[in-house]
Image (cartoon, rainbow, N blue to C red; front, top):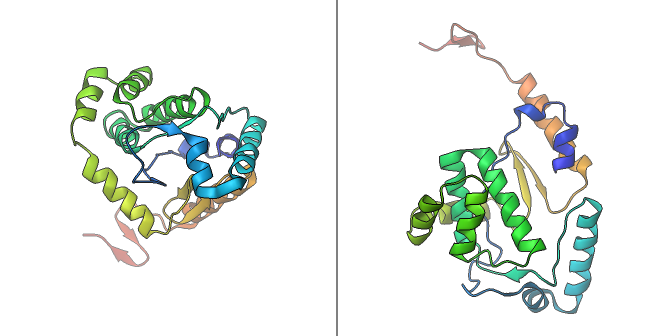
Length: 208
């Protein structure tokens, strides 16, 4: 995705926002080895699947250590990402997401731990005291659960799933060309859409 965004001429007009989704909403609060969870879900093929994903990630310079990673309930992390977007904006949310990915896949950290989340948020530029109080409350919980429910109603069943302007979806690990095609399709539609005139008139009608 990021390679495609770098290659897209209109990258400066693109804003990336992370939305919540849980593959396993019933995951226990206590973290456990990710490979144990994957073997329960996918059986003997789990190790091969994880190895293929890790190899593809290495090709992009990304570390995904499945043997070290811990499966944890991600609801608190999603709430924190929502707070980052709403109070700090998309750039800080992106910085927090990068912190979460690195902690989860490279360091084997428990991203359900409030203390860890507070530290990651502070590293991304968020106020630690605000984050600590937020995580100790139910603030944002209903909204995050509502967004997850909306995603399921849209038919989203896998992560990552990328939705462009609410119209185009790219699911799973895809080559940069797939994302670039989506960027270009949205750009073409935006360029051909009728633009309102300064006087509020378009297509034979005027706003009064």
